[in-house]
Image (cartoon, rainbow, N blue to C red; front, side, top):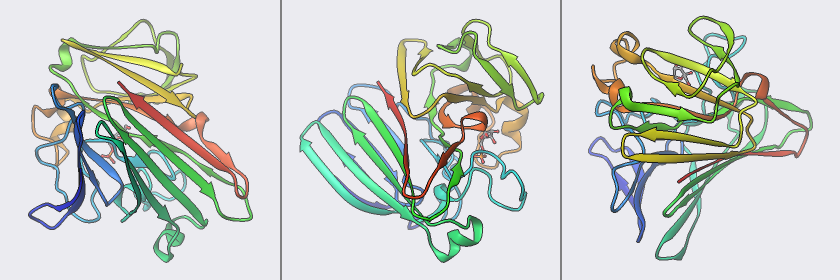
Length: 279
Ligand code: TA6
């Protein structure tokens, strides 16, 4: 079942309920902010202080960072993580193959507003498959006669029981850029979170695993060789209006990206798809 809904403040979203799961996707940003299998805890973390305001990114779920990841490389006045996550997308197609799987296709194209921020014609599509697994495909098409380069992220906020008992497998021996120290380092062993962490890993294998107390979450990617691990911890959370004081204990971002060295250049009419499948 697919239903168009609104929050009390008028923020529109799409609700999906099928035999396997319940999910909610905001039209702004094509932002999946809830996914829960009927017999399990929510997979994605959503801040209780998320503002659900037009023009502001929802804090949690899977924000779409595009056409640049992080701060813009040359213009500090441009929005961090690009403009896709705060733009109004269009729901172009839905499919319910059977009662256990639902597909949504949302689309964003260049506009006079986007061309002021990023001078290229494009078509961006987000394909979401909601079943006992969650799959997200972000496809960029270059609709210009010149090449352009994108960096992007499926910026997934995972809900965790307790950040102190979490580990991330699969990044052992991967080089990473530590955004806190601005240094390049190499990952030793699995990742445990004991303080603020903000790392962009390169040459990342296609399978990562998040171990969270009673559950292990498989994160498989395509069209990506980089990943970001982020937790704001105590001090950074205190500077964020949409993060409660102890919220850092119940979330961890493991992001499937085309970031830093893994940015992608597309020629005229080229396409690139960034995929994450979470199970
Ligand atoms: O993906 C990690 C990161 O780039 C962090 O540096 C932090 O800024 C986070 O994204 C959240 O960014 P946002 O713009 O959503 O507050």
